[in-house]
Image (tube, rainbow, N blue to C red; front, side, top):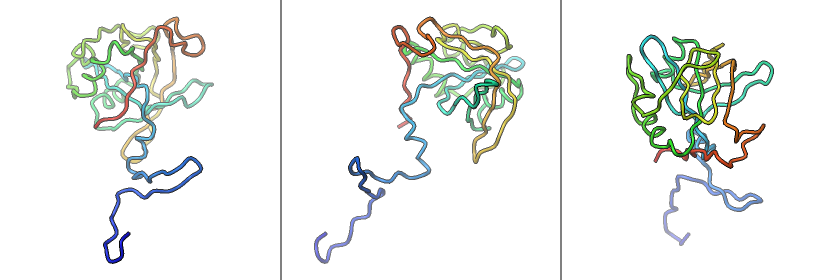
Length: 188
């Protein structure tokens, strides 16, 4: 800094670590450090509504029993449909379906609408749970909703996995010989 000049104000503070210089990230945006991430499509149906939205905030919670958690805003139509139906599916799509995934992310669902079909995604009922399963999915979890837990502005939807299946490219782990995952890098 030059003598007599005002210090420049930065939105970020630079810190030095063993890996070099790092800037501080606003804690309200810390979740963005999880990107890129492979999204899944959270789907549920209730009465005449088929709701769906891409999700990236999901995780395995337990092996035995097999439990998964999906973080969602309670104001989303899909969230409300999951609560009403008490069940949901998670479907992973190949990158060939990226336009459909983008449609699901950018269009709000409405009561009485089949959002999967509006995105060009044909679907059928699950093998063990009455949930929408996308025909083009490379992997599927069919879940019953066991609990919801509030965390700040989101709710964790806890599902018990009743059925899980994947294409042959999954052999205890993905081989990526056939499956080309979509990577979500965040909205700009």
